[in-house]
Image (cartoon, rainbow, N blue to C red; front, side):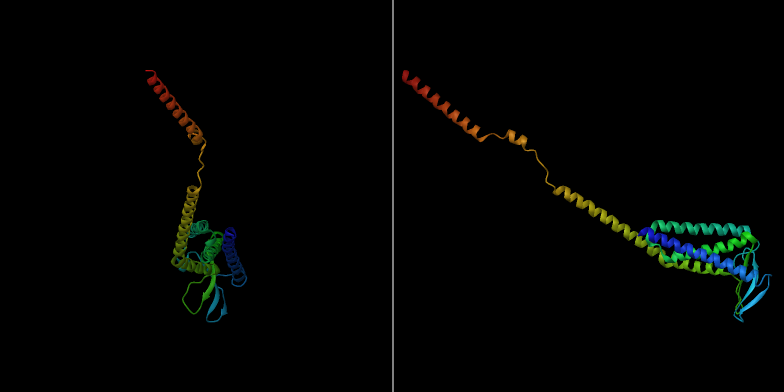
Length: 238
């Protein structure tokens, strides 16, 4: 049962990861390549609210670290590896009690990170195309959406769930220790209540026989009588 729940948590994360990667790469291909192939091309989706415009992003969010693709690739791989490593450790520690919030967060962050990594490795930049017309906001893609929601869930997990998981783990360990101590006490009480077998053969050998004691007393009485008779006879002879 525990292994089944562990597998379900992993399957949930991997399924979300694969879905985000496919969604990101497919939308980039069909929207950018087919509809807006040139940088700056745009089409209206909901006029005055959202449109698609092709933008090459050589940096991170809001253009940070622009022109440093190799550095961004290395940083992305390190951060992704650390988060997945943390997730694996939580699975080993909590087993069937892994939070779904953490599993979903890992899937979203890993999927979004890999989606943008594919662009950086293949093109040296990330292809963005979703734009809010009604506000000044950076152009983004579905990988960025997954990363945003994944990070939000990660913050929720560390603020509200992580400490509760640790407390439950400590309580469970305490209960296990109490149960082990009770079992030891039960075993000890059983040992003390068990009748200890005595070998009475030696005691029986050392116990005097009642008949032998009576015979010995009779012999002593007879000896005393004989001695008295001898004494009286000797006096008469004198």
